[in-house]
Image (cartoon, rainbow, N blue to C red; front, side, top):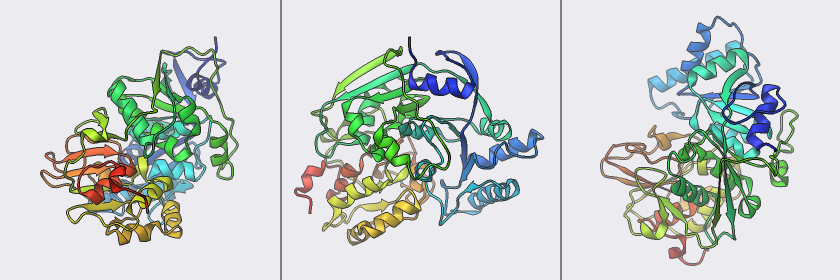
Length: 423
């Protein structure tokens, strides 16, 4: 019997012919990353090891993105610790304001994570890199410290759950809607410690931006990783970006999977996850008319150029509802520049949205859009837990960029079709 893509990647990293679900292994890490919340803790733990130098200056990325530009003295100190450590160790991939981006959008863009890699990050959404056919997973700061010192980490090989999507996507339905639907079906722990594998004719037609969105939220179903088998679309994205050699790895057709789901999405509506869980996914029609105070379009989930294009198509020639604050955050400097060149930022500004430098900002209730008591937001982010974006009595609805943009114009949760013809 063959093996899944996750098993084959982990076997290669462990220097073994094959591995099996439940097996404990030590694997070599291709890339490790930390941000301005998790890195200072990891740096402190690294110093306790007595190891003087990191295992590889080019295989560690430190990205201050959560509270940057620094919102207060504490966040500034966090970044200073990162900056000093990066300078001391000669870490090549340290990117701050003006060069930085939201980490899970920036690393693929720079060609730092590649098909067949094992990537760990002290951030739960490190599973994003599964869109490239890499095994990406989140770890704690102590584990990050261990990797910085040794270049290795232990894993328990996860079983694979395969999600197969069939049919043709309806208008305004994209990667965010697919993953919200899937999480709604699985629940927040339906894929606990499993490797989710996204497949089928719908997935094979998606561009990389939509694939990143899907893999990004695998963790919201409890998954250890969320992978898409690399194909020509993957390779076209990676070629010209890759900073080192790589070997794409695909699963075997006769590989055993723990569970398999098949869904026909021909008639799927755009999805909205109601408070207070990404698993509370419902068709947008079920929440339509809910008044909205704030809309956020951005984050490591939906701050890429295709997301901004979709939002701009709906906002062009229109104004944000006077009761709504619309915040648009391109995920990286390169995406910001591309949006500028395409006139998207002009569209957003004329629609009376605020456009921000790249930052995680409001996604985690950091800054750049904190909610007050009783306020309601529609966000293209990945979590809507109690108090996630501010006051514990605020509410966040998760959606894709099309529903978010339409809701900003209408002043309430709305299907994009409510705006009529795209201008």
